[in-house]
Image 1: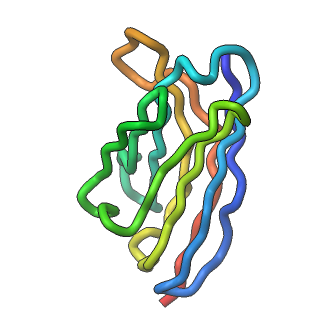
Image 2: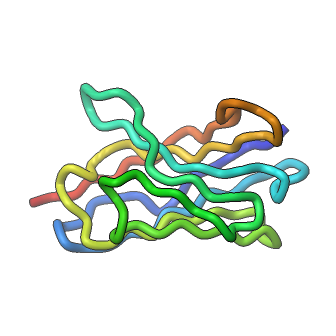
Amino acid sequence: QVQLVESGGGLVQAGGSLRLSCAASGRGFSSYTMGWFRQAPGKEREFVVGISRSGGTTYYADSVKGRFTSSRDNAKNTVYLQMNSLKPEDTAVYYCAAQEVGARLFGHWGQGIQVTVSS
């Protein structure tokens, strides 16, 4: 079982940057595909980025391509989301999630962290 804790959120002006971190505890972090999701007020949770177990492959939602970058450090049991050129529409609660090998869905979630982008 993996436990996930996000950090690094906050308030930033449009055009600014933030880096989110997600620290994992428990065993086998490197065996999980990791992902970031977000949920804006009044909207459904949406996929932002997925990153493979090695970190060598990432896939991004079209809305964040070219602005967001995800990476992971398996030695530190941590996954990151670097967010640049932030827009007010990026305002949301951001969640880190883990997907076990062979699982169809992301089954482990962090508590979420608020990111607010002011115009």
